[in-house]
Amino acid sequence: MRSQFLTDDQISVLTRLRHALHSAPELSGEERATAGAISAFLRLTEPDAIIEGLGGSGLAVIYQGRTPGPTVMFRAELDGLPITERSNAAHRSKRHGLAHACGHDGHMAILAGLGVWLGQKRPAHGRVVLLFQPAEETGAGARAVLADPKFASLRPDWAFAMHNMPGLPLGALAVAAGPASCASVGLHLRYQGRAAHASMPETGLSPARALAGLMAEIASQPDSQPMGPEFRLATLCHLSMGAPSFGIAPGHADVSLTLRTVTDAALDDFESAFIEQAKSARGALDLTVSRHDHFNASHNDKQAAGHVARAGQTLGMKTAEFALPMRPSEDFGAFSATTRTALFFLGAGEAHPALHNPDYDFPDALISPGCALFAEVLAQVMAATR
Image (cartoon, rainbow, N blue to C red):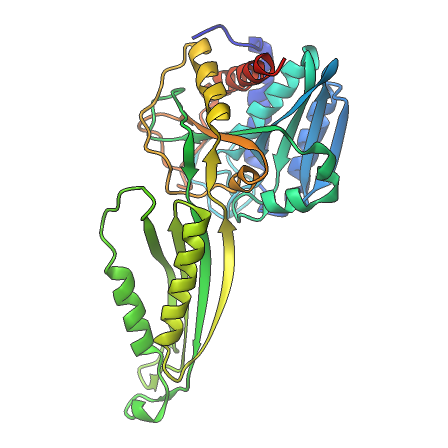
């Protein structure tokens, strides 16, 4: 691989930043201290502007080129997860029940590294926006940033985001045009009937039959589905019914599930059909449905994906075999509807703990190649838009 863009000392500083962020995770929408730490770090690079409070806790750091040109945005995520970390590392989470178990701390360190690079080498033309986005894990952050009036003047012509991926060889790159991550939405179904004595269930109104039909429908899904236009996946996440008593027939039930498809349009159709089916099977029960954690599908623009692929080739990076789109959702997809985007993946190691596992920790060895890749992607875009 081509020599790194930053010095060993600069990578060491970024590694310490990553460790500090890792030890102090914050939940979605509560990332004020995290954003403050990034802002303080990047002020030292003397950016042309810093905009705080984007979409809540978000932060945009802007580096202006010498002449007019495209606006190129790179995005990292600020939020951690409600997971108790299992680690003996000195930088393990100091906040009980919270962890950076998805690698957002590493993504932030890499994007901060691009800021260090831009602080010493401004783009020849155009401008670069480094977006540190809140609330990615809930799917709310990207849309909140897009809706914020402060973002209107920053709207990019190109937008890029990286995610580390356990299971792929360390440092290997995966990118392709087309669907990159699935659309998904969480549904909460509340069935309300009437409790009864367990010896006389007919005197009440139980949700058991409606739930049995719902479970049978979910169980009827094939164990393995190819990723394509017809992909539909409903995943049961939580179920509770009645009271923990042997003498009471239940009168209410709560169901939480996630629906997942390859495109936004397919998700709209799947959600509508699923809700109609739930309504038709409820009988005399009252049913209320609420939506949560809605993620748009991420779609990679052909030109944007091409810039990433060429950047990897220029750096001599290995190419990873990775089936796209990935099933997990990524709220970077909200930007796909507004500009040319590319979401790409860097291998975290074939035996590395999986994302959202309690023993996951971002591999520091990815910081240097991640910084180099971001900088080279920028170079590819600027060279193509001179």
